[in-house]
Amino acid sequence: MSITSAEDLEAQFGPTRPKDLPLQTISVVRERSKRLFGNKDRLEVAVAIKRVALGKVSATDLGRDVDMAVNRIRAQLLALEALGLLAKTGDEDGKRMFQRTNDDDRFWGFAVGEYEDVIGSLLDD
Image (cartoon, rainbow, N blue to C red):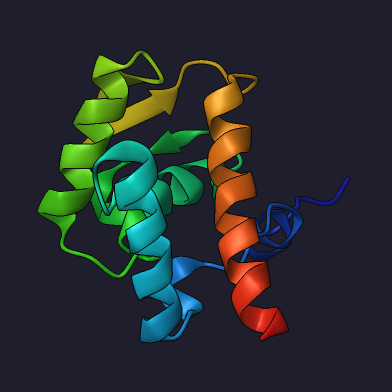
């Protein structure tokens, strides 16, 4: 039985990582996030959380996908926890870990859909 690599798992979960996008595209994503959620970071962070196959994340680890300061990512994790979308699971290797509470919650699909719409509209131009 072979073990699926992290890269193979990541490839299954598109969409494009925020860190891989041009700054102009990220600016449009952040503007959409601001209009939808009242916060420019929430959409990127939500998509990065959804990309993690096991649903267990930390602000430090999400920094690989999202090009923003860890304290900004942490603020979004805490906000999503307050909404009941994440739950703290304790610390691992000195990192505060969070787990998605319900993978079927409409929020995750909505966030990924909005993100893909923004990226798709910019790539079509």
